[in-house]
Length: 314
Image (tube, rainbow, N blue to C red; front, side, top):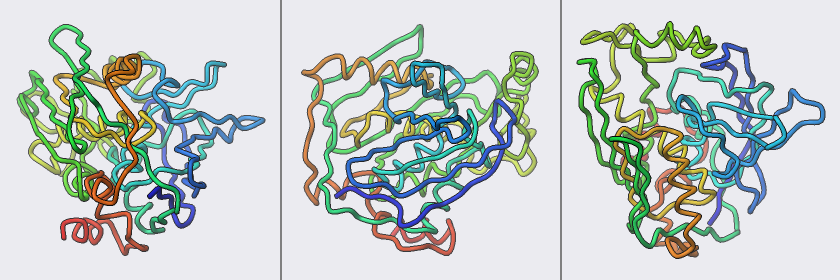
């Protein structure tokens, strides 16, 4: 069955790239609504559906575009949190052009959603089953979707900085795996790239409090890493959010090698351009149990993210 939030939840912070103060609210929405973002700083307010064909390619974030000059950037972490908690219907209002970065991960969004609780709806849920492999490439980088009975993510990254180096991880996304394995992994960057990004008007809101910054073998962010492979986990977090722009849960294995936001969106466009590569499937209870939100969708309000993690692991 479809699901939404039991109540509104509010977040405040700054945009990672704009540095602008932003207020975001996630509201319950009726069955069949999907995930829709609303720019409330505009008059009249403008809605941007969270769908693959409303994305403008961007290497450093995922950017929604209504086609008439209104955009909303850095939606990937809140999209990942919604997908990872099994939320299918929500209205996300934001009073600026960028989602607040918070701590650089999806954990604050997950905690807020779980604290207000998740409500099951009476409408049936449909998933998108991938029927044959679809792949996009750019140089050594590639992203692929292939058939699977539930969402799996297999990711590899390679960086010259020894603090990251080569990392790879494969994860079955069912039964709260997103919460346990990925949600708290933060965005990261190389110290050498920070000044370049800022000269180009990017990363203006970035600090050691909302990003992991590395310089060669050193992790400059105080407190170090949350996971030894936090970088690849964050790339998988981003992929979870970007894949949620399919508009429904995916039954597929996603394989990414040096892939990013723009490549994952290209992959979704390639999938939906080939009608014989996918089909809609009505979710049975057994199939719902294999979706990313399984194990968390029945939670009431939670006292905190750590408690939610322990329940998801049961």
